[in-house]
Length: 240
Image 1 (cartoon, one colour):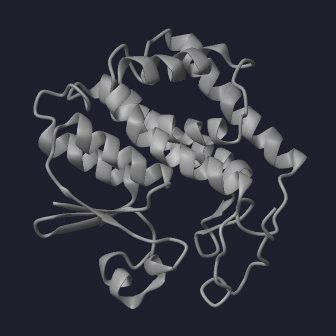
Image 2 (image 1 turned 45 degrees about the horizontal axis):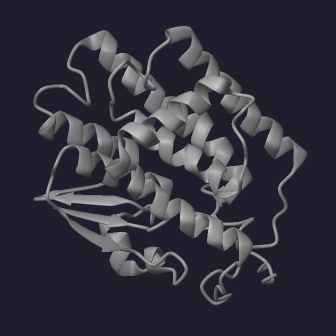
Image 3 (image 1 turned 60 degrees about the vertical axis):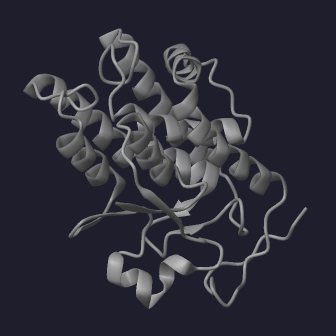
C-alpha cells in the first residue's frame, strides 16, 4: 500500500492518522506541493483531479480523503471500532465526514490556508496576496458554531460517538489549522474540549497532525518562495 501525501495537508494527515490507528503498514510518498509535483502528467495518471492524497492498495487507486477513510474502515476495521457497522452509528460518522468536507474544513481552509479547490488547488493567504476577510471569518465561525452544537446536542466525547472514529481524523486536522494561526477556541467550549481531549488521549495520532500544524505555522510567519512558473495565476505574497 502507498499513500501519496503532502506533509502539511489536513486531508493527507487525516488519512495518515487512520492508517496509524488501524495499524496498517504502508509506504508514505511525499508529494512536494510547492514544486507543483501534483500538477505533473505522471501524477495525473494516479489522480486526474491532481489533488492530494491518493491511496494505492493493490489494483485500487483512489483519491478523495473521505473515500479513502471509508475504504480503510470497510476493509481493515473488521470489528467496526473506527467505522461502525450498525447503520445509525455509521450514518452519524458519514454525516460528520460530509459536514467536514462541505462546511467545516472548507470554511476553515478558505480563511486560514486559502485552498482554492475550484481553481487549481493552490494555497493562497499563506503564500499569495490574498487577504483574510470579515466574510471569511464569519463563515468560519458559523462552521464552528454548527460543530459546537453537534457536540453539545449529542453529548459525546468524540465527533460521532463516545469512541474514536474515522470522523474525528479530518475534523481534528481541520481544527489544527486554527491552532496554526493562534486562533482561540474559547467561544466554542465543546469543540475546544473535544480537540484537547483528542490531543491528550491519542498522542501518537496527534503527533501526525502536530507536524503539519508546525509547518503551516512556520509558513504563516515566513512564507516560502514559490515559483511563478509553477503557479502563474496568483500574485505571490512577499516574505515578511
